[in-house]
Image (cartoon, rainbow, N blue to C red; front, side):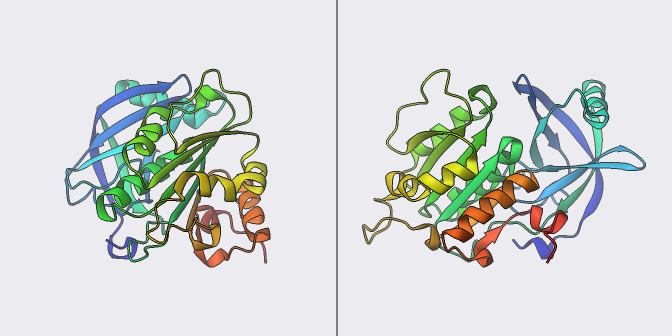
Length: 268
């Protein structure tokens, strides 16, 4: 499925679930007509607050052909649109959305290992990519690096650890600026790094890839960052800080993909 073959549509969806994933992030499940809800892994939708306000959210689920979409929404009490959205979701059983949008989608024609780097609810986009890769390319190596300020912000920690435990080609690298409040699940492909994500990549990227996925390739050789397709999701500042580190390591920007490149391009 190519992002370019899907026409963006406006439709009404039913809100089937709203749940707290942690004190600051809530999950929303929407259901609509199957053909209208089609999307490629990595795309986003826009949710209508009023006639002049549409808010984008990464689609946090792989298109299973059932018309169901998941969202992970960060609640910011100090931001008016965030408060309005939270209030709307508490009373509305239907929402107007338009989808799909975004060109940062999983390239299923590539067999290169995946290096996925996310911060905060940027995990939502990576979740859809991981699910799609495991479904369509079940042996493709995946190294997921998920950065947050503190342990409680790893709102889908159990799922990420479960991937790394269940699938020998998946490794999970949790990154927090503050120490963990308790250990992560035990697993040879589960690791924790303390620090800011760009600085962690600077110091630990190669060893993290080797430790997590060294036995995946049939050659038995360790995976190098230069072997990977790299997807990044987070704020522009976070994404470009990581890009700078990766480029200093000699990686080509041609194999780096992020929505940030489209909505917040760097001046040339």
